[in-house]
Length: 82
Image 1 (cartoon, rainbow, N blue to C red):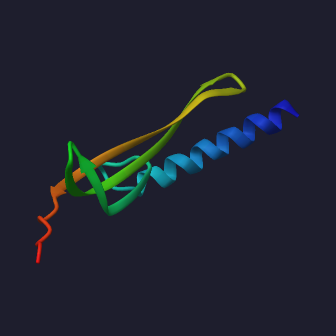
Image 2: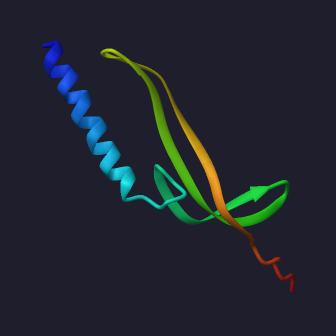
C-alpha cells in the first residue's frame, strides 16, 4: 500500500511539473490576466498568479500554502465624472 501511495505522489508531481512548464514564464501556477486590483488606494489591472506549494518528506506532505502574486500591473485610467 505504501508503494502505491509513493507512486501516486510521484506521478502527481510529474504531472504538476509538466503543467507548470507550459505556464507563463513569470508564473509557476494558475495565471489570470487583466484582473482588477487595488494597491495603496489606486486601481490597477494586473495579472494574478496563484501558486500552491507544500513541504514533502518521505511519504508525508504538510505545510501547504497558497501564495498570490500580482505581476504586470498597469494603473487603470481614472474614472470620468459627469
